[in-house]
Image 1 (cartoon, protein in one colour):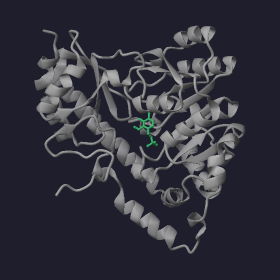
Image 2 (cartoon, rainbow, N blue to C red; image 1 turned 90 degrees about the vertical axis):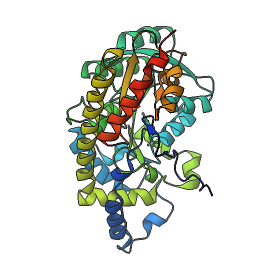
Image 3 (cartoon, rainbow, N blue to C red; image 1 turned 45 degrees about the vertical axis):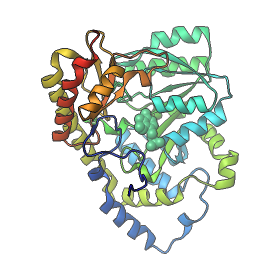
Image 4 (cartoon, helix red, strand yellow; image 1 turned 60 degrees about the vertical axis):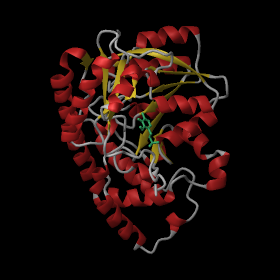
Length: 382
Ligand SMILES: Cc1ncc(COP(=O)(O)O)c(C=O)c1O
């Protein structure tokens, strides 16, 4: 009998699935959450079982604000935070409230492919902007803004999905100032910001949110557990007020009272801090292992830049090889990845692929890259 599927992606033991941008199962902190739940459920307070306050529980937002203030090295106040059911849900809500079908959205080329699906659900027209190893190119944004004004700019400024690139501090200032000058809403998807290996990345765009025109998305999916469906939006109170005041929340109340109560308990105990540091060390080691295997197994055949955080390597195949053609051969050899074309706004990036190092340990990563290397000749033009 085949059991019904219980998670978004079922992983076959025969395949090393380097497409998976998920934490490995051993990184999902069952014991920490069990203790947090026991503590919170034992307090005799039933408020988190009630319809929640639309902006999110104030005790949770206060703890989250403290946590972010220390991690961002910039003051974050609870009034600048709105509790979401994850970054995807927040992005969907922002599209509902700040755009109309037919509007244009500027994104990076390549961009997070599942955000592109959310934009499609809202009937938005996506325009890709050039990027390089330092992220979005501000001159290209300036040039495009002279020709048209989008409803928003969507960017993943730290450890981008898929390229791993991080927008430099100087470029952040330029992008921010261009959006403000042209009155364009800047939606910064900063879900990987806290996963810098060294801890030293440029200040998040969320830190500039109070100046206006910026909504920054964060998520416990990347620092605790995706199943909690818990995230936040950082922004100026007038924009957050529009999110909190929408009909959806008027009917259903705040988005995640139960999971935010659990996360609050972890933040209170300091265990979220410790868990995040463990994740950063683990992902840094996995990223080093992937870099070493790529160098050893694929050295001359690809070009890549190891990321400084997050989950992904963006690998360019040399010699006009095609990642879509590589995929079936790789699968037959026991490894998968996401072909670059999936992230493109214009049918490009076919010579690229995204490899994730978040799910497997160093040994499996090395084996996965070796399997991939064995399949690469199949992708070369004949
Ligand atoms: C850039 C980016 N945004 C959002 C998400 C999804 O976040 P959440 O689980 O909070 O909806 C992901 C997950 O892969 C991502 O890579």
